[in-house]
Image 1 (cartoon, helix red, strand yellow):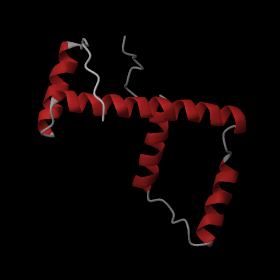
Image 2: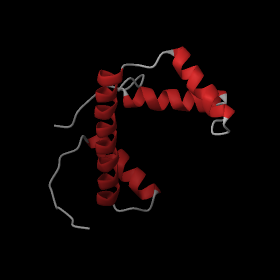
Image 3: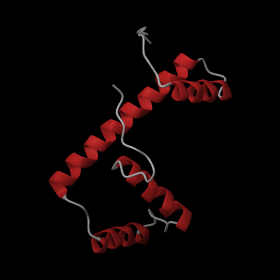
Length: 109
C-alpha cells in the first residue's frame, strides 16, 4: 500500500483523544488516523448513496417495509428484530442521514 505523508492541524482536544484511542488499540497515531479518515470517507460515500437512492426511489412506507419483512420471513430469510437490533439499525440509519443527536455536523477544513 502506498503511503502519502502529509502535514495536518488538529484541535488540541481531538489530538489528545485520538492519541489515547490509538494507544488503546496499540496502533501508531498515523495508522489510527488513516483508519479513521477511511471510515469517515466511507460514511460520506454511504450518505451520498442514501441521498441519491431516496431522490430516485423515495422513502419506503411502513406498509411496504412490513410486507417485505413478512415475505422474507416466510421464506426463512428474515428473522424479526429484537428491540436492541431495531434501535441499533435506526441509530445507524440516523448516522447515515447525519441526524445523530448531540453531534454537530462539522467538516474539517
